[in-house]
Image 1 (cartoon, each protein chain N blue to C red):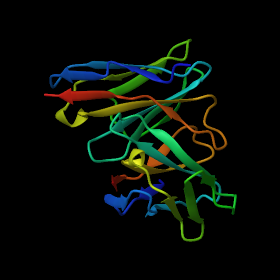
Image 2 (cartoon, each protein chain N blue to C red):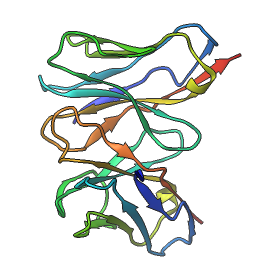
Image 3 (cartoon, one colour):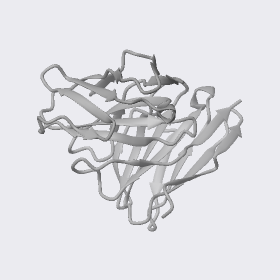
Length: 115
Length: 115
């Protein structure tokens, strides 16, 4: 079975531009979360979606938005890109909303570079 | 908010030897879950081991085991019989029972395995 897939794998954007990152969860998984991992740091929680509803939001500006589609895939959108948005963006899925000791399964991430 | 601290940015171990990675966390919750994730150069986060706070018994997974000290808020990872494939970044992560897949990660420990 395919794992969590993210596209694109690498992306270069200019300051002020908009970017859309995509994530397909493992088949049957209904929960998707997004994380930002700046070089040398641990992942920081951005959003969680479960059954197409936002279930949590981290401390990120309104330039960051996301949505989940009926097939449970998800998009992360970032507007007005800043140099500081350069990071690895990770998507994680799980079968439920993260109850119990359920682990999250991560994709390989999208490396975003803002120049 | 919960915080996770990994005080060892880098560690090294001889192949076949044992190494312990440290993690402490801060929380006011009595019930929660703790995880160790491994991130190799491929960037994909892989679950190593998990621990439920209500369980006193330390979790073990083959060569990997934890020392969970709830009162001290400590959650260290022991890797026995280290192998070259164990070389990676290791992240300690905390998850509340009621916040879905919102993980709090530490800053990571880079583990080098010396042949």
